Length: 141
Image (tube, rainbow, N blue to C red):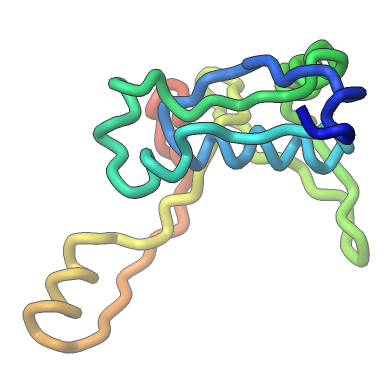
């Protein structure tokens, strides 16, 4: 074992993710708080996501002495509002049906946009400004 590693506690597995994007987001949360972390199997799943179930997902590891802090950071609730530097306070969109904050924007209408672009060679973008709840599936403006 190299001398620098002799004083550091070992890494322990704290979370598994099916999707690479979720794993990277979790690692970003830990990195921003100064918790040392790393991902394993990320490159294999990046090349072919079908391997995710076989490998047990993308694994997020942190030092043994920081595992509790890391889990606490990952289990935080999504804040209702937060400050954005140089702008007003930002309020998270919330589903009116189930009150979840797991909401995404649905701006691009994919089928007509892709058909226009690839078949007609005309770069058409058809958009709509509604929101979709990823928890219950509700769609609203």
